[in-house]
Each structure stands twice: as structure tokens, then as C-alpha cells.
Amino acid sequence: MTVRSVVSRSSAAPAPEAPTPPDAAGTRPVDPAPRPYLHLDETISPVVLTDFDVEAYTRKDHGRLPVETELLHAQDPLPAAMVRALRAWQHLEATALTESRAMLATWTGNEARVTAFLATWLVERYWLASALRDLLPTDPADADDPPHRPAGVRGPAGVRARVRRIHVDRMQPLLAPLWSALAGEAITAGHMARMAIQEATLQAGLQALAPQLHGEARRVVEWAAERHEDPVRFFRAEAIARITRSRREALTARAVLTLTSPLDGGGVPDPDLAAALAVIGTDPDRRAAVHRARFEITRLLPGPDLPQRHLAALSRTGV
Image 1: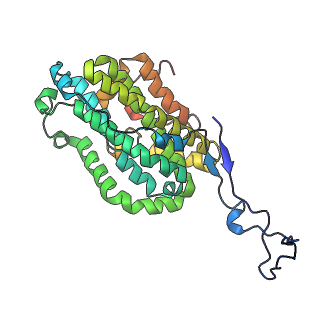
Image 2: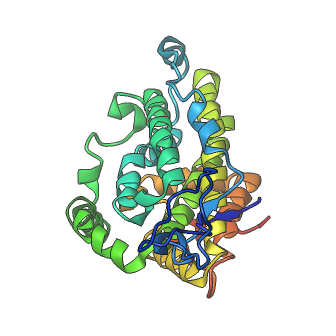
Image 3: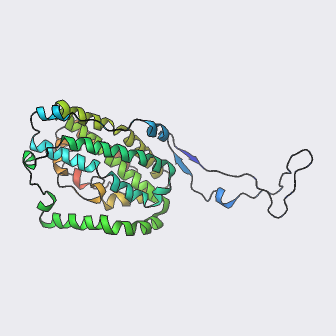
């Protein structure tokens, strides 16, 4: 991966107090004491550029994948465990709008390459979530699950989920400008690190789920996993470039990953996530891929390795 920092500079500027008209030959005199403009000198942070071609990504076909519902209904119903796992990944796919709102409400919204990528990425995640939703049974009885799953969450976990939802819906839009002002440009490193881990985990989860499906369901899940390849590359390259260029950005990325798990889509935990991770746990290669995806980022952060409660039950074999 190659990272380039680009800073626009002006090597010469005309004296504001005594402009000299062009001579008869049409050439301008050279200012003997050039004064670079303040907004073009080293006080501006370099622009992060990686080898990922954002323009090429935006030109790709990111349309909807038609799901053959007739073929799907002709197949045997999915086991309840598979439905819960598929629903967890579908829910995480569908949180892209919330994740984007959290990013674009801060300094990250000033990053032209990032915003251009997110505009297309949002469309892609929408269609991915839509395709996975088409695989889920419409009758809750088919999934051996109550029809109002969120209301069924009881105890401390349910209280935490409700508090988190209030925070995301009401407090986060108010706190985002303050958080952005305090962290500044460094907050983008945290956002890129969070999304790099989330995208890589989504891809590994879908890849682990696909072999346990068949027919139309397997085709759709394999397609969805493949469509995560570009986002994984983009977010990982952006995160590594920013984390490694300054300690401040590395510390900010660590703070972002400490405050909330990348697997809590939109900042809200999903009760089905444990079932989805259990599917990954049955495949040593995918299990190792999830740990490696996270380690690619966390190994660059200062301090000890960050704990990850969602992955604590998975073996680290193969990392």
C-alpha cells in the first residue's frame, strides 16, 4: 500500500501594496520577496491519498441483486440458527445510514475522498441489506422466534440497549459537533478503523455462513460477501494511513474503538450477534480471518491490545 501526502503550496505571491503592470513584452516582474499565502503553507494538514481508486469504485455497478423468491420458497426452510445468524448480518448491513450520520456529522465530513466513497457505499450497503432481508422468513414462527424480538429483551441487557438507543437517536446528534471540535481531523482515523473492522467481520461472517446454505440462499450470501471486498480495502487503507502518520490519530482511533464495538451497528448491540459469531466459530479459517481483520488495525494502536467482548469466546487459533 502506498500513501501519499499532498499539500498545495504557492511558491510566490505578488506584493499587495505595489503591484507592477506588465512590461511592453507582456512579462510580469518577479517579486524579490515572495510571501506564501497562509492558507497554502504547512499549517494545513496533508491530504491522505491511498492506492484505492475511489473514482473507479463509484463507477462500478452497485445496483440491486434480484432474489429469485420462487426458487427460495421451493427450498427447505432455513434452520432457526441460520435464520438468527443471517438476521444479525442483515441488521449490521442495514446500519450503514446510522454509521454514516455519525461520521459525516464530524470532521470526517470534510474529507472529500471519504465522503465520495461513502455516498456510493451507502447505496451498496442498502442493496446488500435488502437482498439479505429477502432471504429471511416472513413468518416469525419459521425462525422459532417471538414476533417482537426487541421487546423480549429483559434484564440489564435490555436496559442497556434502551439507553444506547436513546443515546444514538437523541444525544449523539447533539454531542457530535462537540466531539468533532475536540478531536478535530484525528476523529477520521477512529471512524476508518471502526469501519475497517466492521466491514471485514461482515465479509468473514457471510463467507462462513454461505457453505451452510444451499441453492438461492447460498448464491445471494456469496454475492454479498464478494461485494464487501472494495469497502474492506478502502477502510483498511485509510485507517492504516492515518493511524501510522501521527500519534494523536492513533490515540483517537483507540478511544473510538474503546467506546463502542464496531460490531454494534449504529452503536446499538444486536441480541442475534452471538448466534452469528457462533457460525464463524465453527470454521477455523473464518474465525482466524475475523481476528486477523481486527488485529490489522489494533496492532498499530498504542497501549495493550483492546479487549473485544463479542469475540472473546472465539479461539485465536490461526492469528
